[in-house]
View 1 (cartoon, rainbow, N blue to C red):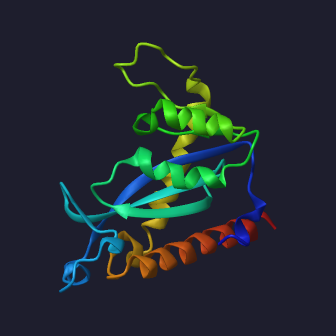
View 2: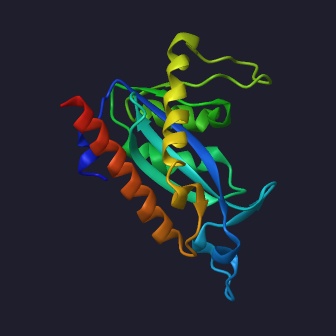
Length: 179
């Protein structure tokens, strides 16, 4: 995936997450391992997929966490792959001062809508934010793969490998359509 994502459009990058339900046969394990990335949420046992995409909605990095995990703490792992001189689009779940500072330290500009309870409202452009639907479309394309719409693997490394394989396929399909 790292090889095919070298053709990144560096103007805009987006961060978001989605939850995937864990199949009952993948969940039954005699030993409980913290590295399985399965957690309880409202929908039962789930895994959360966090993604960093470019402006076209093509993935640059994928991270797994348990289903009950918040979005903002996992964003720190994705920020290591930010490119400078970009605009980072994210939803209100990523509205934290430490995250904004970390994005700015990487040389990027955050465009995150502020939470309602904020006293100080940071700069936000609704015009740029309209393009964030491309990351939502990426998750929809990813969930067209039956194996990824429901998690059947017991180990998180196997599920992440399947995610990265599907992401590489989406990149190759996009580059074939360009030629």
